[in-house]
Image (cartoon, rainbow, N blue to C red; front, side, top):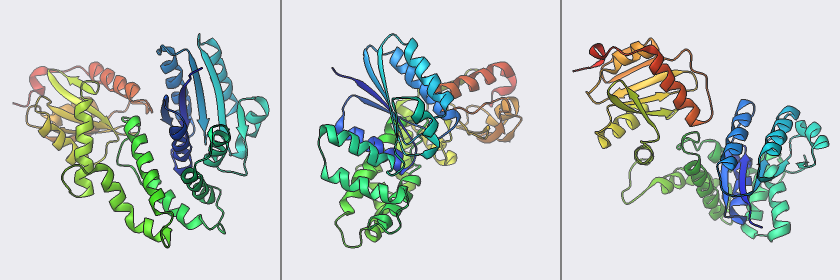
Length: 350
């Protein structure tokens, strides 16, 4: 019987390591990542909705490197039970704080002697066969994640930890699929250094070039320019889904994109059919860029009590409540724009 797997994992080296394992063993799998707290609840809802909207009848929700509260576990069970499809649950974790859940739920596996990547690898390799490279990667991650300072892989693990934690080039809220691909690419390239002399030093010196290799196409450039070009391409491909209107003007909404001046202006140059670029952050601030078709300083004043220049402005959306699902973020911003009311005569920058 074929199952669709929805794999929710943490956002660090150990969390992505777990997903690297399942990505090796399975094909029909969708990846989600979360930090602790409210985001877990939003991701669970997102997964349940995805299952409900899918034609696939048999599903597995796999959670790794995240410990749930008892209330979260109960909510997950209740949502699964009311679903009309076959949905199995499996959680593999190593955080001792999940002991109460492990004692109450038979799908909740806890072992604090191994990192989650090692638990995941040991579980699936025992069923589907061992893999030498994955086993090595697992041991490297295990050494640093549970902090085995005397382990021979510890120093290499520290470099890997820094590489993944610093890999912020692709926004995981807007582009979760591409972010997962990026993380898997980095983890694969890490493995090329395992047999080198002083692998931790060799990998440390190669971090910049490893990142560039993912974003480089037919033309080399600085990492910053390559990342900007990659993100502009992603935004262009998804602009209809990310479209946001302000009066008769058409814009695109991003979330915590970073480098707004560069990416925003590059996007508008590549997409002359768009009039403005808006980025909202988790701190409720907005950054606006335009190409001369709309005065975004007036727009910022109207919707965000802000201001600035006609083509570069900012403000604050006081009523915005941070979310971890892009569709929810976009709906909020659209509602805020509608409730502010637009004075067409004052907003046309011409």
